[in-house]
Length: 378
Ligand SMILES: *Cc1c(COP(=O)(O)O)cnc(C)c1O
Image (cartoon, rainbow, N blue to C red; front, top):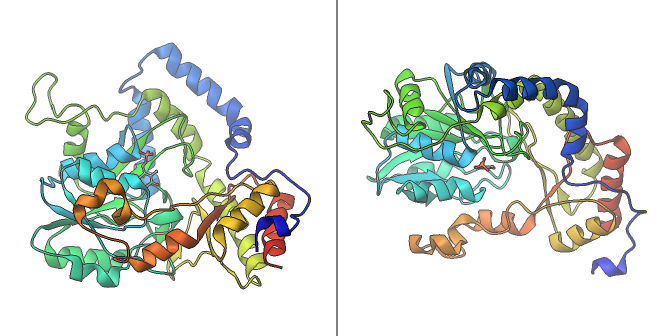
């Protein structure tokens, strides 16, 4: 069966993500703030950075937050602050965005994997303890697509083996597990403001959260070349700062974030209900106690590539997050893994398809997506 044997419903444009609508609604709120920052010309470490950090820490229910240059840099900064050393192992998911594992490698540590849970697609914490060895120094749970990984078990295993926890919260700002927000339970939470994240900046940006004052001081120092006092350096850090302009922009958007999450949940509920009857499609499974922010709404489907082409013909955008697991990436061949090592993750990579979920979607667009999926499997 190929897409050419079927006729999709009358075309309607439903892009995977449309940020223009959100910006248009916010433009009158954003422009005066941008103008104020530009007028002040305090472009680095301006007061808006500290202001945004306080707001973000409040939002994430953490004592401290440190703005930084990207989600990737947040991960690297966290490992520097927690003194993860060359050769130390960091356990994470093989089914994640590249940056999680790329950061561990770039920091000089060794990525280690456990397979994923077929329901949530987050790493399977039941397998965590077996992966711990004498070199393991940290666990980096990834809260994928907006839903948190099982933190109870992560916290237990970390405590038992004296490991640090670095939460990759890049896709999960505002997501909760039994009431606790993403990024509030580990040693450091790492967030991304890449424009396609639920809280998207006007370019790159990121954030580290922590409950520990000492870690907070280290994060601040390391993001500015490792010096507490200017021109005096106890350690080598980097330039990992968040621009004043970004911080000001993000402050405006943070006020609307819960509303946008609500819209995404409403859209998810619509898909959940209307796609339930399609046997070949599995809608996202949210674990008990979890509240997803649906950074992605990711289906598991049969004939994935054909469905994607068919959706495209009907005007519906979709994406494969992610087509190749981390243990199968060429750049990580040195780790010695091969296909078959993490079969559940590999199967997910062959079956996932993310469809439009952003809050500004109109009901007719949602209905069109559902109708197109249904007519593909009819
Ligand atoms: C987006 C993302 C990152 C990296 O964030 P950037 O801001 O793009 O550097 C890291 N991990 C995950 C899971 C992500 O989705």
